[in-house]
Length: 391
Image 1 (spheres, rainbow, N blue to C red):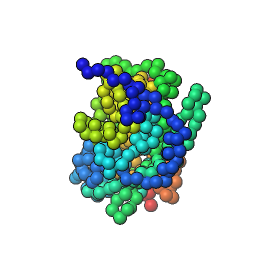
Image 2 (image 1 turned 135 degrees about the horizontal axis):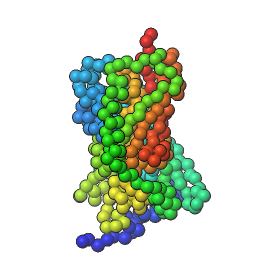
Image 3 (image 1 turned 120 degrees about the vertical axis):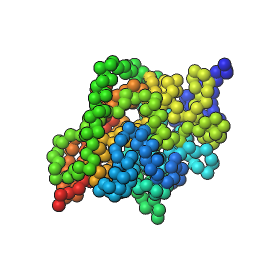
Image 4 (image 1 turned 60 degrees about the vertical axis):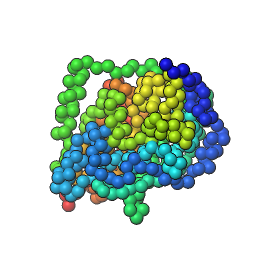
């Protein structure tokens, strides 16, 4: 058995276990505000297969994504992609010097990054065979002094997705909270939270819910803005229980910047030491994303178990909306806020309601909620959807 490596040994001068938020690091971040950088793509061209892979990672069986004949015969007249499919165009592995770095690798190396929220804005749907590119930019940095000692940083990022002719197809704003791992371990905020366990009756209940969801999908039955009333409800829609298969399936569909292997992992390590961690139990080297599926890394980061990627919950909310709005609806904006971690074994129930209507523009505003098996709210969202008008 290989010798265990001390998890507090710095990797190329990066201390992932106890990385500090320093004045110099904050100054360095602020010096890069407003400087755009290219984002390498997991996918460069939209294909039918990549759409299917993303939908598979969501558990979204909408025939708009899966059935070319259905999509061509629909009101859209062509095959298009789910709204959040565009994650594919910013989550490529960066294993060459010319591919640049993400903000987590470049700024505050070794300091934990948690997605606190994000906002999507779409100008139109994405079509099969389009070629897209993306650019990122750090747009603001704020610092908060913690009452229990130490500090945290909130970084605000913007990504633009560009089609031919530099047409902006969509924009995505990220809000990422950065914490020193020593703080999160000492606080033990979620370490005593009970992990999920289910009975045969629970599993049967999940089965009944999944069996009912396809009939809830609006599909080709046009949903008109005039037929809605404030207070109308969406859902429920079930996601989970969260398993390692669930997490891996989403990553396969959305891409990953942090999953090189073997010799290419060593290349990645040399290029991006701030994105590496040493396992506290066995001394192996892995990337920061491993905390989402490895319990040892998760606990070293202050979590009691592996946990989902925040972008998955945003994508789940988009699935709830696209099922509700029907083929002719257009999701214009989706803003999400993560309020609690979604841990391995958790079942997530998505619900929503219509909170405002503008018949003149055809826009309906929705308020959405994600609730786990403990009746805890783990995320909230607000969506604007353009619907057809009878006129």
